[in-house]
Length: 344
Image 1 (cartoon, rainbow, N blue to C red):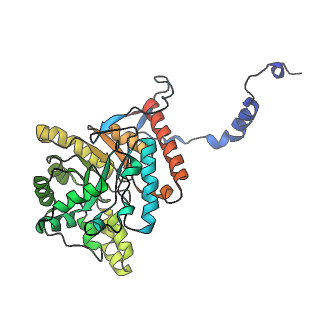
Image 2 (image 1 turned 90 degrees about the vertical axis):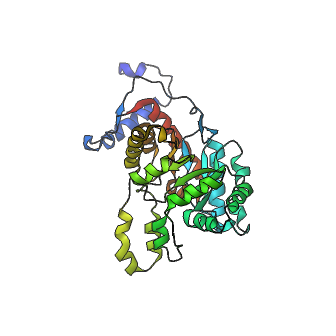
């Protein structure tokens, strides 16, 4: 009998595991051309991470996980279950959430249940309502900015997200005309409100000069909504006729990636000094996984979380259990990244 067969083992899975290793060895080879060169792998400097991430302050509240549920959908029958699943996940994992456009609630409470999720997410986590820049412009012109206060109050939200979407409105068949530069509308609103304000784009990001104007305003945060994720200009073109899509499709290819916007913000912090007022950021747009989130949060020289929309939507549409499992794996991956992957 071979000597090795006499060696006792306390691991009943050892033989099966070793057989798996033999069978999968050739499939497990990785080409060096595909190495992710954003990171250095440092395997001896940390133990396996703790069971949970350390909580931290963001938007004035303590969150456990640096993932933001980016604004998606509302005002339809299907939206209720999607948003309910997302709010429940926020409660489970200690995340913040931004609602989709709450325009429908400005005049009627008929669709209120599709947005009314404070009771699910709880009081301890950030939860923000959302309105478009065109609607805000109209409210200000009609001296109805108080309706934003009413909206925030009825949702028990922490503040309001203003989504800036001039290209989407222009391309949308039912789109609204924007007659003022959005920065002027935002400035006017800030002069009239005590609400906490987040400003976001809708899938093409902000150029450096737009960011320069925004970071000098006393807003709570900027969400990138960068090029690379769901692009609402392209979405509106797909809703229209084929001729219009062919003529304007190149517009959807213009914008700024999340990585480029991180670079812009870091430059502006150096250039503006004390004039740089916005201290918190939601990095979103093309964030596919925890590695993207980890890399960009480490690169950005400001407090941040990373936001996801479509990546969460595909699971939230199916069931809460699938959404929960997806987020569990993302968070475990983020913990490992923080322990072993140093950003270059």
